[in-house]
Image 1 (cartoon, rainbow, N blue to C red):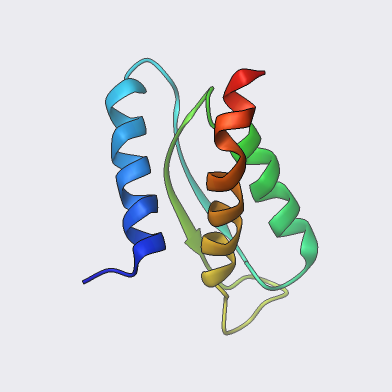
Image 2: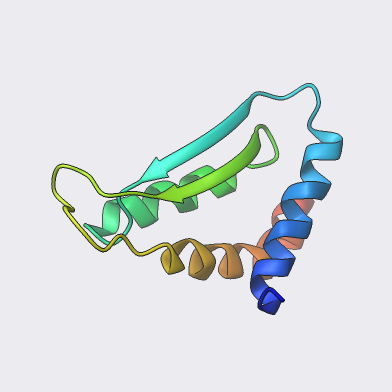
Amino acid sequence: MLPPLRRLVLVALCASAAVAADRQRVIVLADMGNEPDEEQQIVHLLLHANEIDIEGLVAVTGKYLRKDPQPELFFKLLGGYAQVVDNLRLH
């Protein structure tokens, strides 16, 4: 059984896929945990989630992050997004 936040993310991604047939599909690979700029980029991406279909977020290693990527940072950011998405839709 998935934790509640992961279930929420899965449901949100499935629901967005149903209405996103005419939008560009995106899968993002990021070396999460290396520097704060990755988190800032994901926040920026989420602010534009109404314009694209985010198919997946994948934490990977990279040139500067050789081991131990932190995929839990995605869930932290998605949790924050879930708290403000209704207000974002008003604007």
